Length: 152
Image (cartoon, rainbow, N blue to C red; front, side, top):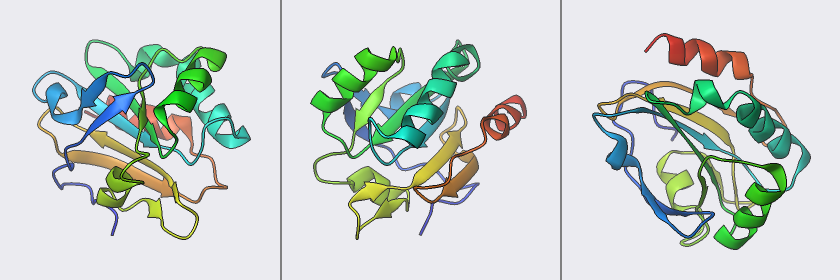
């Protein structure tokens, strides 16, 4: 079941594309967090969505907001993906145990071994304030993120 708005976001610690550990709860009290699950690095829709975030990064990563993008890809492939596309935000690997964090958020597709397109905006106190979950084939609307962040 997908984590609902109003619930506390499950904490996690994952490795980013540079081999550094990133823990969700480390942002508590300091920043709102936009957690973006995506199916696979190097695929058309995923690349397009993350490039749109990259191109508008000042809204999604600043003094008040931190962007965290999560896939079930290995950290090594995420490093190459980030370098190729110029991503300056953390790409986190939910590779092993495979999809463990995506499962906690209710966005893991067991049959295909991938994360659905789930986005969760978590406030400074760790509560989910907005979310959307789309199928792997359906891109998300960036304007919706902006509106949700503006309401915090």
